[in-house]
Length: 281
Image (cartoon, rainbow, N blue to C red; front, top):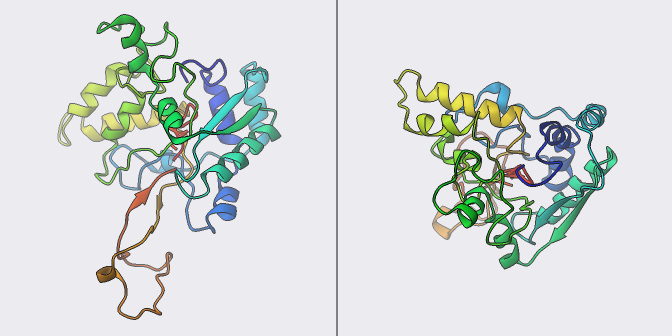
């Protein structure tokens, strides 16, 4: 959202969200096992509410209206950078996403990068950009008045895995909105930056409480479509023999109630983080 002429516009980011049929993505690529949501945090995470966990409504007409209001220029193509195998069906998902955007008039394409190059793109963000030019003094504008910096010196449009939030606290995700963070794809020195440190330092029983401050920041992330989320997912990649059912014929039903045997997590963005501007999870 920092350097791209279209992703820097709130209404364009919202248009991308409303142009996305997340339920169809889950049905086609993930066998309907996941539930779409609007914030990449498990329910119960400090800062997330029912409102911000709700997925963005799939509404292509609304997306077109938002693009018109934002004076969207289709000459400014939006690229989704991925590398094969980052998470299941990530290339196919990205291609489907680009197609949905194109259906409402957005110019989009998918580029599959080698892992090393993708990492260079993903690690490019606000903190590294302003330090490259300004040293250790960001001034009042941080990276908003400098070009993209290292490692790739390019617009870092990429779908990425976002940090897992097993602690059920949104604090770890705040670096995605922090002008000082090296990989941050969003920077708002006036409305967001002053809220970050107080929220991180706040106690649950403080005044204002940690819950209140985290909710304020999650609200901003959701309403500004800063962190673009598909769903929060638990996926089995495998388990060791002692964790397997004693009856080899017994199958684990992913929709069965009760705790699974093992819960490694993966999150697709957050463009996530989006995203793209956006981190997709």
